Length: 278
Image: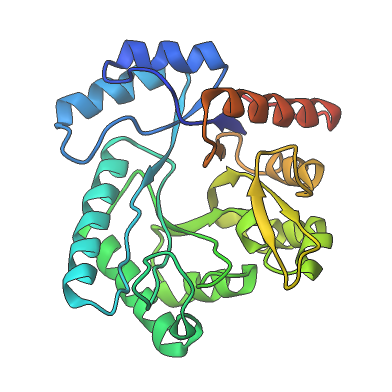
């Protein structure tokens, strides 16, 4: 497996991008280009990564393809198609988005998010994105979330079966699935269940952490890896069972120093578990 994170450096030039990754010891990376990049620009990036043994883990397609607003939905589908095309040109592990929300907040909770209609609309949107691009070197994935599908390994498997496209795979963020005290205290078992059921489909993962406060009602907060209760020994052991190029990507931290501390914690746990990064 490979570790990566956002970079606080000028990555417009492939050589500077690779140098910044080497400086941090990362062998996985977020794609440094947007979908307006020419084929020549993408190829230079791909070649630099190949020579440096760096895997491009993800191209983000953050948008709302199931929005109730037709214009928003249409724009999101077009954006996801463009980002999936970029991911394919860049030979990224995956293009990742969330399923989207039936509410006004693109990534927020809504009572319509767990209906059969929402499930069917997710299937329709994923097919429309994949069928427009027909990727051959990457997959489209949906990040697991607490208040929309896929919200569990079982609902993810249902989506994979319903979408019925070989280019649809899984993206795992176990922190996002910890949405109750029961899951918080049993997150090691939850992580093992995710890998048991989704392991063959997982292309990339996110690295975060989570804490539970004693304030009523239930309050869960995302924190830097190492400051919460996510069972990283289990997480890293399960990851080590997968394809050696599966990527573990840090995200959502406010400063470069925070990313450095998060990476140091994950590497320390990996060492304790006799797990190695490529």
